[in-house]
Length: 384
Image (cartoon, rainbow, N blue to C red; front, side, top):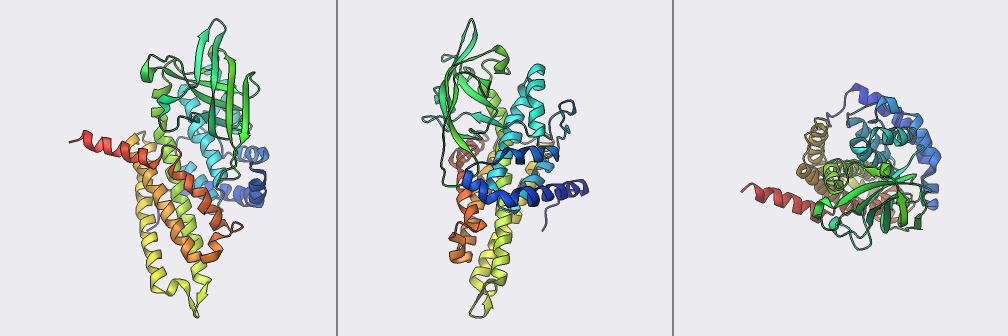
C-alpha cells in the first residue's frame, strides 16, 4: 500500500529535488565524510533551487509555504542516497532554527536573519545541551545576566549540530534562577561576537559529515535585540517547537527505513545462495514480509501526523509517539537488512553500513526514546 500523502505539485517538486541530490550531493558524499563537514556551496545551491527556508514569508525571499509535505519530499530524496548528515543539517536549519525565528523574532530581527535562511547563506544552530544537562534542560548552567550594557552570556554547550559552520546560534540560558520554568530565555548569538568561540569538531560514531561542536560563551555581551521573544519565555518556546522537531526526526527515520528496505530488496533479489535468490528462501522472506508490513503501517501514522501538523493540530504527545516509533522501526529495519546483506552490510564504503552508524543517534537526540515513552505514559495516566 503506497502512501497517498502527495499530489501532482509535490511530485513535480520531487523532480527538482532529485536533480539536486543526484548532481550536487551524491558526488560529494565521500569527501564530506572525510572533511567531517558539508561545504557551504551545497547550501547555496540548495537555496538557489528553492529547497531551503520555504516557510519564510515572501518579503524575505521565501515561498511562505506552510505545507510540510514539501519538506517530506526533500527528506525522502536525501534518504534515497543515504545522505543522512545533509538531511540532519537541513532539518536543523528549517525545522528548528528557522521555526524559532518565525515564531518569536521581531520585525527587525526577521529582516536581519530570515533572508539568509532562504538563500543558504546562513546556517543556524541551536544550543541547548550541556556537558551536565541533556534531557533535563532545567539543569543547565549557562546564564545570561542583565546589566546596564545589555545581557552578559556565560556558559558552554556541547553536541551542537552545525556548530562549526553556523552563522548564528540560538542559545538557551538561565536568566532568573528563582523563577522556575519561567527563568529561561533564548538569545541569538552571531558569528564573530566577542567572547563566542568554538571548541572541538566532535568525532562521532556516525553522521560524520554533519559538523558537531562544543561552543563556549565567555562574557558575551548581547543587546536587547539579541533576545529572542520575551524574557523568561524560553522554556515555553522549547515546548511549543518540540512537536515539529520530533516530527522531523520521525520522518527522517521513516524515510531512512524505506530506503534501507529498498536497498535490501535489490540485494536479496540478485544475491544467490545454493543457486537460489536469497529472497526466495522462507526465513529471509518472512523477515522481508514483516519489515514491509511494519514500514507501511508506520508510514500511515506518519502521514496522519504530517496532515495534522499542516492543520496546526499535531500534539506534543502524538509527535512523541511518532518519534519513538519511527526511530525504533528504523533500527529494526537496518538490523534485519544487515543480516541479509551479510559481510557487505558491515563494510563502511557501502551505503548500508553508513546508514547503520548514522541511525543510532535518532533514538537519542530530540529527546531520548525513554523520554518519549514517559511523555506518552503521563498522557495515558492523565486520562484515567
